[in-house]
Length: 472
Image: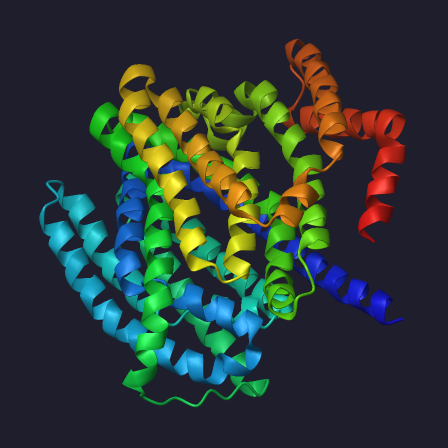
């Protein structure tokens, strides 16, 4: 009975996170195309550039502090009441430095509209992020609350976008919607934590800060590496290829990242349990096997399907002006498996508290992405930047995989991969044959899902059954 209750509990977590991701995907499916259509290619590219730059300044406001707190609280929950107090105080001090950095960077921007966005969004997002409590909800396995907060924030953001953004001149309302929705939902989250009995004892103890800052700086360096391989492409594309190319690149990578977030649900749910298992000696093999099997089963067909039907789906989702982004999406589609794979294996290292190995893994991703970004875009344009984006995650995933314990590496070699590739190729052929018939994009997606499922039922049903029984 205890085992079944555990499965029901984590099944509920998975359902909660899945529901949140599905509703979030629906909201994003509405707001993202609406936003890019209203802003246009050039302005959307500039907004993505501002987000990329602010991503680097956020590292100053949060130099690995929440990463340290999340791992510590997940592994040793009795430490939360001391850790959170110190982390919040340190974040306030770091945020003041980040605000100064934002203002300095903005002063060097030649375009007045970009300078205004950098100042407003950069400062406001730094202050708002200091109130965020996502790391606590994750560590305490409060996935239901986290899902509610996430849906509420996305809903408020969507309301702001739909009501205020009508043309490229309204781009300022995009950061306003983000900051306001984040502030309100953070307040809701803190209120719930307080009413649920999580009464943190706030105190100032500089002696404890030394213990926190050491590992946090490793996590800060890791966050810098992650930001480099995720955001450096935006900077390079603007420098080398211009603002129009940046808009196409940003739209393609953003769409791929939205799909990657949905594919990474299993890693999100299993993360705290991995940290707890690593601390109690329970082992990580079974959890890794579950996450790897889910990743392969959903990730491989997503890549093949994305490559085949991108010329039809991209203009349908983003508008005719973004038709050239279809080719960019085809090149970036491998990110839908390299991204979740990096999250899985880097997450295993993070869950075990090995902050140096965590830094090495993310550094491998940064070196891969930055090196390729400096070489491929000048030679191959947007396609080269998209390849660099996907391979940056691959570099991090491969390095983390090699640094994982042997039992984790063995568990990750799921037998589902071979059948997933065969079923995905059959699905791809069916979609390729259907393309000249000019089917509606939703009909093409439904056809792909049906062919993939039927192929598994015919040639992989017994294998899938054995795999489910093996991890049960």
